Length: 362
Image 1 (tube, rainbow, N blue to C red):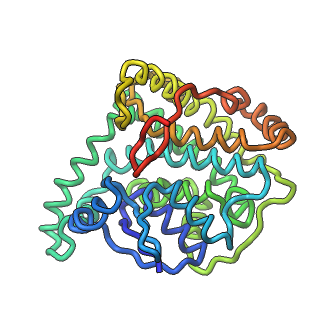
Image 2 (image 1 turned 90 degrees about the vertical axis):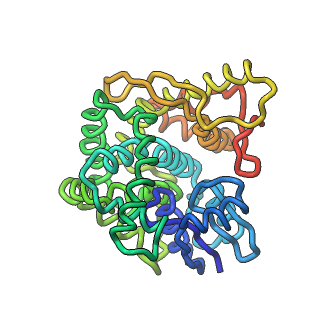
Image 3 (image 1 turned 60 degrees about the horizontal axis):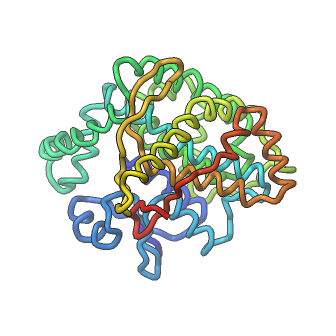
């Protein structure tokens, strides 16, 4: 029996919960209260991030990408990794985009829209789960204030908010809605890693929270159906699309990824290399190493340089580099159509790794 430590309000918990259900792995879910953080999560992982999965052998796993990687190795049945190289790469591209870029609208719509007192009650469950609602709301408001402080760090400001909303509602939801009108999942009738990554922001924040939930219901009913399908238990296995094909409905989103997110990822790698040169004696890498400029649908702004993004970037680049020459050629043909050919072959000068759940230089 696996144990999932997390919460319904947590972005990344939704990703792993859906994965465990699809894999049909027996698990129980434990709410990550303050007491659970102090007694279980921090002592066994060294960090205070959720979700955490405890294996039947007593191993504690942290970070959703590595959790799925571990569980795929130890539970190869009902795999969520496509056999084709191009589909595998596209799945990883969507995972990177969902985990690290869709956080922007997820955080904006949660903290800058009318989701209260719902959010206060949700966060209050973490602090005072057994207390009356008014006490939960009191503590939930104090905890929520901490999380809402991350909003400007992501580059969400009065200048960028109109572009963020326009992009999310008229690009992200629009193209996902068109795609899920035809396909059950990203790459056919079986979910891939990218689907589960999408579940993070699209379920916990943008489907469950009242204000963005109404937007999704109104603008993207096929995305709503996909979210609900992803949360089902005893889902039929399904198949990936044959011949390693990529649906044309995904191409606008892939193009948007390379137009918008990948310049930020490239600059992050460059900035981290510069930071390393002036911090030669430091092995642990801070979560942020300063600020840099980014462009969001024509609007320039500043955001924190998130060092962890390079770790996730390396996973995608390594996926491509592990292909044989024929597979690389097929993938490059697709990437050339969506503006990603040069990016996928970029060279990261200073690599990072995760050791004991901490980001370090490799």
